[in-house]
Image (cartoon, rainbow, N blue to C red):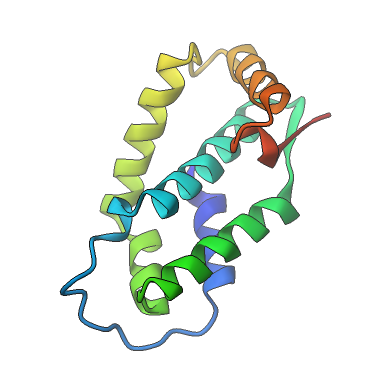
Length: 137
């Protein structure tokens, strides 16, 4: 699920800067607007990866990721801190588990691509944060 997210965020992150102390800041996973935005991109990526009739709106996803990076920078997180967060194996595993639970709660089953397609089409129709990143082919 996170390969596209990691690639897009890495591209959006650009040059690294030295990390600054995070004394007064929560972990990026605890910043709802960052966490929720990344989660929407990750879920959209998982849907398009498992449903042949749905593709990603890549330019829109890149724009979302660039806005998330800019927002994290504005909140005081350095590019190095952002990169460490998105490249962290522990964070990838946490996001995967969260995503799998979310998909399961919404009737999506691995090995049943039609469930990914149905959920994806529903999200597209609702124009949700996830659906806005997808296109029905």
